[in-house]
Amino acid sequence: MRTHRLPPRIVHRAASLLLAGNAFLLAASALPAADWPQWRGPNRDGLWSENGVLQSFPEAGLTAKWKSPVASGYSGPTVAEGKVYVADKITEPGEQERIHCFDAATGALLWTHAYDCAYQGIDYGYGPRTSVAISGERAFFLGAMGHAVCLDVKTGEALWRRDLREDYNLDIPVWGLSSSPIVVGPLAIFQIGGPGGACVVGLDAATGSERWRSIDDLASYTSPILIRQAERDVLICSTANRVAGLDPASGAVLWDLENKRVRLIDNVPTPVHDPADGRILLTSFYNGTRMLRANPSALEVESLWERRGSSERRTDALHPMIATPLLRGNHIFGVDSYGELRCLDAANGDRLWEDQSAVPHGRWSTLFFVQNGERTWIFSEEGFLIIAELSPSGYREISRTRIIEPTTPLAQRPSGLVCWVHPAFANRSVYIRNDRELVCLDLSAEP
Image (tube, rainbow, N blue to C red):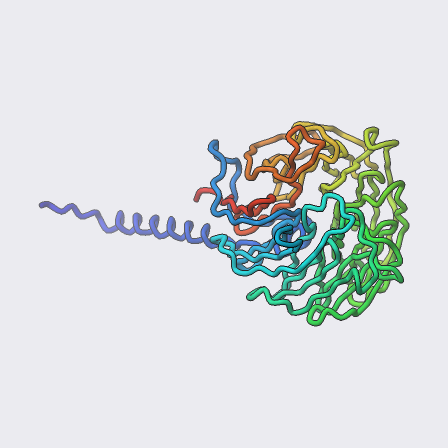
């Protein structure tokens, strides 16, 4: 058999190309993955920083990497250090809230922590609302009836547990306690609406003992965020009738504005902060839209504009029930009271366009927005994941696929079902749950 030898220069060039190709593939496989360790992501701002993800969905849709059974609830998944956390509720043999920990790669159940919890006076009482917050080796959770727990992430063992309803004589809101806890340094911070200036409490993360209490107000359903202002950390809390900036270490009120509601407590969307200029966007179903600006060089805040329609059908700016909007430069994108996707001029709230194609018309129709680069990933209450471009010129849908079936009863929908859960984006995957299962789907692009 005759052997053909290539000239040395060709062999060298071929080897160089092969090594370069291998280096490219290794670099692509080593692109950093990002965790989603708390409500709305690493910084609670709905920003997903991973690259190497799909630009559109395959025609056949996405295939689940794994599925694991869970029970009912609105608790959105969180992901940290190779583990996924989610909470649910069971009613048999007795009412319990449960926190589960799954292997992020395989979906294998690692542990479950459960405690007795009978829901009393809660509408839409299908399960807990908040997301588990992960900080180091601890997982923190607030249940709908006020149970606060700190768990060891390795074993699920309770490091401490408190019944805040009993400890603080809480009047549980009609939709349950829904504000996801936030961990700042050695403190776990909860919005609970306690009397005697205990609307927000800072608990020692290691022991659960109270370190401070702040704000004399009822609880809302919003989750606090942490910003930088005047070269220090400031915790933004939107309560039933106020919005305040707190020192997260002491609970001291650094600034405070009245945000008086016009009807029932309905501020659910998370405050949105633009670190570029200090603007803070607040939205709710009845109160509409308010834009503030936190002075970047002093502990002061000013109200820039406020707009509210005459009713839930005659809205102005945005009146979202659940969905947190996007604040991107000079524009606001969000879903209105009956599912109308809108773009607003961030300078004054003027409407630039409206589109109804992302989600069907219906009271409290909901979309969850996550920004990845120039593209917006949208999860709809119908269980669709959508890749879109949002701009002042309009809504451009690039691709959509159903990733989970809606299972939560809602009589106002033709199907009678919704999925009101914020997904988690981590490890170039999306993690989403309904009232039956937790699902992980791969979103990584082809090499």
